[in-house]
Image (tube, rainbow, N blue to C red; front, side, top):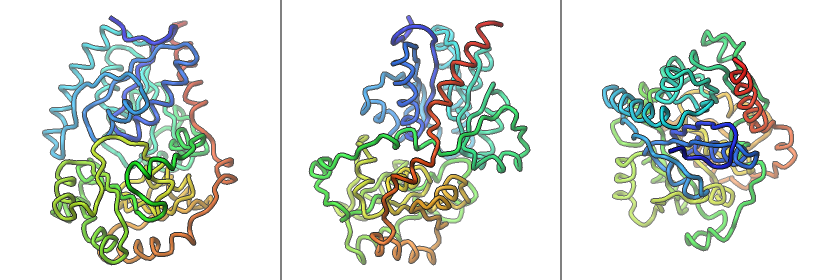
Length: 365
C-alpha cells in the first residue's frame, strides 16, 4: 500500500520539529499541485503533529522524541530507524528530503535513496556529522556559508539562497485578527514567549548552568508583574509546561494544540524565543523579536543587518532588563517590512528544482 497523492515522483519528507512541519507543509503542497506524490513522516514531539493537522496535510507518525539523555536519544533514534525502514521498503520513495533528520537520512542512505538536506544550523554538530556526509545536495542560507567552511565542510555539495527558510511560510501570509477574539486577546497587549530547547544536543553545555526546566521564569515574573502584560507561552517539554502552569496559573495562556501562531505573533507587543525560529518569523512580520539563544545565530544577524526588528540577547539575569526595555519601547521598534521582504530570496523554488533535478539524475543511472 502506497500513501500517494497525485502521480509521478514519490518524495519522502521527514519533519521532526514545528519549524520543519511548516516548511514541509509548503513543500508538499507545491509538489502535490505539480502532480507529484508525497510521503510525509514525523514523530511525536512538541506541536509538530498539530501543525500538519492545522493545514490538513496527511502525515504518518513514526516514533517519538528521545528526551535529554544520550541513552534516550540513541534508543529512540534506533527504534525510529527500524520503523522507518519497514515503511520505506514498502513505499519505495524516489528521493528523500529532510531538515537533517538522522534517522531518516540513515535509512534513505542505506536503501540507496538520494537525499536532499535543508539546514540553517551549523552549530548542531552531532546532527550534522550524522547527516550531511550522506546527502546528494544540501540547501542552506547564504549567510551560513562561512560557518560551514569553518566547520570543515566542503561546500561543493551546498546550494545557497539569499534569505532564510522562514520566508517560505511568511512571504504570502496574511494575519487573521479574528483569532484574537477566539483567544480573548487584545492587539499589542500581550507578549508571545517560546521556551528554550533545553534538551537539544547543542544546548547541553548551557542547560547544565541551571536546574529549572526553563530559565525564563524570572523574565516571566517581570513581564507579568511589572509590565502587567498577558503572556502566551509555548513550551517545548512537559516539565516546562507544568512549571509555568503551576507558577502562574491563568495569568499565562498555554495553547495545548497547534494554532495559527503567525497571526498571534503579528499582533503581539513583542515575541521572545529561547530559540530562533519564532523570533525570525515574527521579525519578518515587523514585530519586535528577541532570541535568547546562547550562541550567535547567522540568520538572526543577517536579518538584523537588513533592518528587521530582531535582537539577540543571550539570556542571563543581568540581560533580563534589556529584554524588558525592548518590550516597554516595542512601538519604537515595530516597522513595516514589506520593502525589506522583497530583498530576501524564497527558498521554495530552489528546493523544488533540486528535488526534481536529483530525481532526473538518478532516474537515468
